[in-house]
Length: 355
Image (cartoon, rainbow, N blue to C red; front, side, top):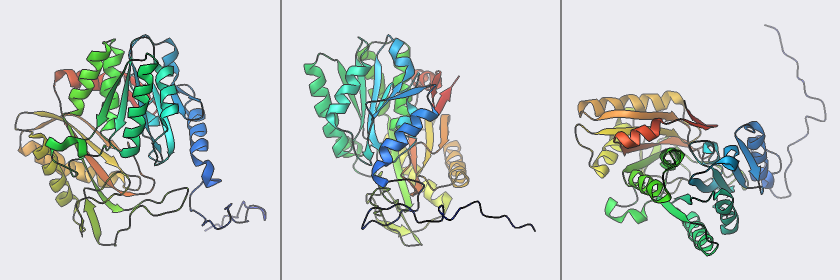
């Protein structure tokens, strides 16, 4: 067999950049402290036909400038791509306010985003239930009110592993934000009032449930810190977005066993009965392959068929990742004709499209 020669020059063979005292991360980055700025700049260049980067941390829908409707704004840390920046575009988010890696953005930049988004008909602010995001959202809504901007805040709190539905305020927000962006964005695109869009978005948020399983933790691309460590034969059902502990470590189970445990928990939480219709989403965490996700989906589909529960909408892939973490999130939501119509409505965001 022919041997391929190296294209590297002696200069190319020098070691990777690192600050004094820092470990070299095995990632294709430059100065780790510039990761957020550089990823947002690159993202805006890659999808310049759909979005623009403003004020260093705002990914803005190019169609917002001529919109005459309720606007949709989301906030969240970077490091979870494509969420949330990948869902900015017509029929979904109008602005995503980006924080540093795994960190909420500040209230000041979020107020700027709400002011920028306002088109005279009010703004929906979608916030995941994590301490930093909640604090930012609360401050931004208060300040926007003083500026005369009408804002309705929708908080996602669908992680069933944290608390029972009766104590939903204690639940973390997981990947359920993504289908919520779609539902809220589609309602706004129909030129519904602020109260109507908020009501629909909240109704959907109240009828969704998520649970996550982890088998390998991520590393923080700035510090190199491991977010969660697992033994080779361990897994954990109920982990948080960043590897936070959930239900405790257990021995590794098969795809079918894991899918059954997780789906049962979601159906039980929502009280889904025979004859009902749902949206089913499987979200990879970064390292989990599509092969694995489809095998899990296969088991979910079989269980749902046996119980006469119809999957009227679904999506499988990487919607909200955590660097190279391995595992997946399972999400379901109760659907009706109105919600299904909004799910299927046209949209054009870099990582979610409907025609």
